[in-house]
Image (cartoon, rainbow, N blue to C red; front, top):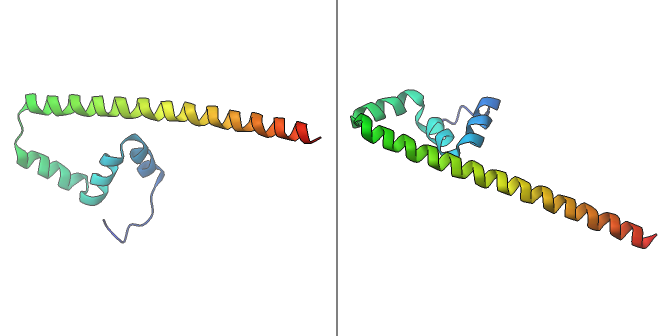
Length: 92
């Protein structure tokens, strides 16, 4: 990683939330270098499409898990708040 670039912009945070792997590779190698490496592979269109499809499946499942965890956190928070308010009302 570039040590001179220690600040993380809002755009980088957005990229990280979308895909931590994408953020990492762009941060380490840079977009231009990644494009050159990809072109050096000389991948045919069909294989590229297959990788794109795999990536879309990965992102879809990642986003689904993210949403499930968000709902679980909200349910836990609501449960804790209910327990706290019941505990306060018992002590009165």
